[in-house]
Length: 66
Image (tube, rainbow, N blue to C red; front, top):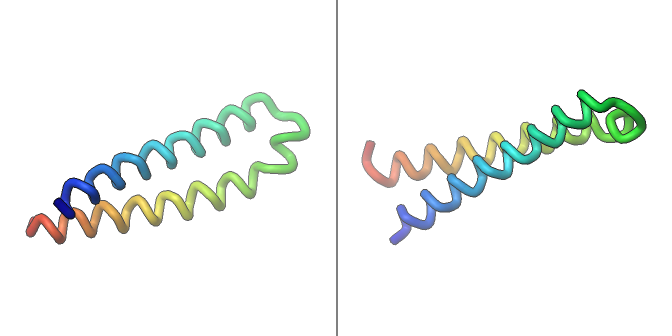
């Protein structure tokens, strides 16, 4: 049961990273005030979310014994 929950959490984290990345790329392409105010913040959030996603994936792999 734990491995299914970790697999679902890993999939969710990948979607979160993708959403943050898409938002950052979209704001960079559009430019403007939103990009100036939030580009560094979005990059930091993406890095944090990506780190958490990698840790969850590694936990899933180690729990599965692979």
